[in-house]
Image 1: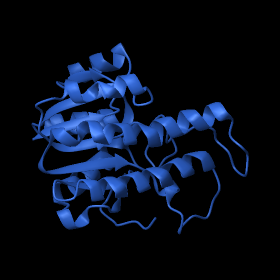
Image 2: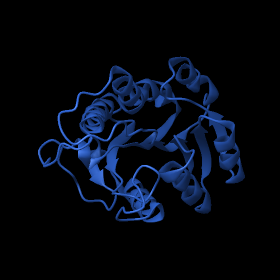
Image 3: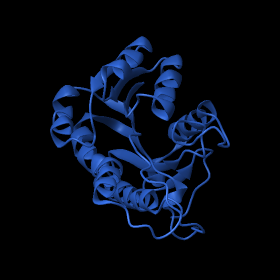
Length: 221
């Protein structure tokens, strides 16, 4: 199996690398700084320097992966932004940072990877149920919520554009004990990633455009 993990410097992305490598997969993984790239190499991955918030950096990805045929692609890069509880207007800098990473990043990446997908490939975007609109009962982190609602829309459009070539889905990874999720979260990274890998191994073309919990439950959004 040939796997691409975008945003693998730590947390969920690095655990994807660790688990897929343990399963014998060939891994290409991206990170922004040399220390993170060294960690990826230590796990046996081909490490590529990439910043999804930088247009020039992303524009070179297609060349770096030319000739590849990925069975699985995971777009994991994301940031939370300001912790808010109500209608606290984000600064322009915070808005740009979150939206550029969480929404524009995948919109830049998807065209770059399209030609490097194996027939029947599975593409997953890490989203969050915080982006779901119908089930929402809290306003905390409303900038992050807006970005994840938007990236689910991006995922849906990608599923239509890549129909017949790849199954494209998004995930809520659970509330995970990572730098972003904090120490009081529900599950560890190993549990989250094992669940998402199981889903990725089992989804069919009819599932394209769907939003899944890490344990395979379908989510409304």
